[in-house]
Amino acid sequence: MAGDGAIALRQGDALDGFEVTFDLQSPQAGQTISAGTAVEWHALVSVTGDTQGLAGYMLNLFLGPNTGPEPGPDGIWGTADDANLANIVIDQAIEAESFAVAGANGKPTVGAPASFSSLHGGPGMNAMTSYGYNAMPGTLLQMANAHLDWAPWRYKTTFPRGWTGEHTWGIGMESRKETLLLNTTGDYELNAGWIDTTNLSPGHYVLTLVPDSRAKVLDPAVDLSVAQPGGLVLPANSVSGPVSIEFDIGE
Ligand SMILES: [Ca+2]
Image (cartoon, rainbow, N blue to C red):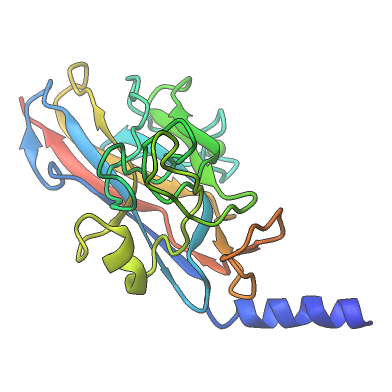
């Protein structure tokens, strides 16, 4: 029963917080643009509750005309019966460079690993990295990153092997913005991209971000100052979404 009690306690903790909120922003939101003008998009995250930040996520993007994309009869986004999708290919995402951590000499992205041979910075959420699959028109599915195990961030400045750290905690937390972000009052940006609208007909369009409901957070009970082989994540008890922006293609 001791084991059961521990599990019950974890579930009780999760009910107190662990909220992961995704957002979608675009400079073209609410605008009328001409076909061929790229629609730039940014996927953001914030994490609240008693946690040590985001530990894993998967995002899906859908573009559709008029009232916008729909999950179809099965009610599930990202399956073959999804409806009202634009018949264009959505380019793969990039990892947005919003992070400041050790990024001065490299790419401060959410997934960039810091290794013996790399000066790339970022929090090092670098397991299961995906920039999305665009095999189905009007969609970009399964953009993802995760922490599966943990090597605490550390580095030395001696030539030639400067960086030995891997992971930094606190992604999404307001209290960690000053440490982690280039713009310390800005947003945590996970992925970004540009949609080529050259082949879109004039009309109204809805771009919808659908987060996978199984987003994970870092367990507040885990000591992240030492290496952790696993068991360091908990499911978020609340994941926001879908969230949409809209734009028009002019005649
Ligand atoms: Ca579906």
